[in-house]
Length: 62
Image 1 (cartoon, helix red, strand yellow):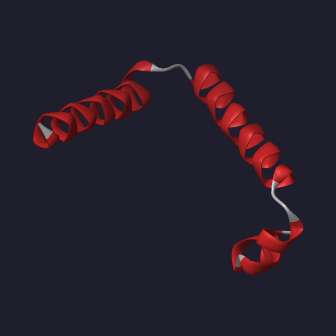
Image 2 (tube, helix red, strand yellow):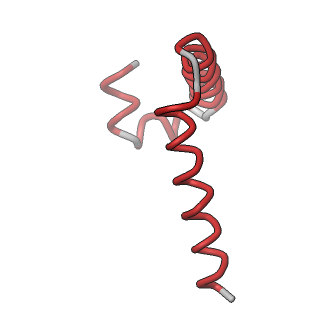
């Protein structure tokens, strides 16, 4: 059962990568990138300060 789920996830990931490379227009790619960037910023802003202090990647980027 676990192999079937992994195979399905792998196939889904490969299909998404192929669509990203060959199927999407530049404008659509830019929209996706901006959406992901904004979501990452919102998540980072909501993290408590003590967790941010423990993660070195946040300390170097903040």
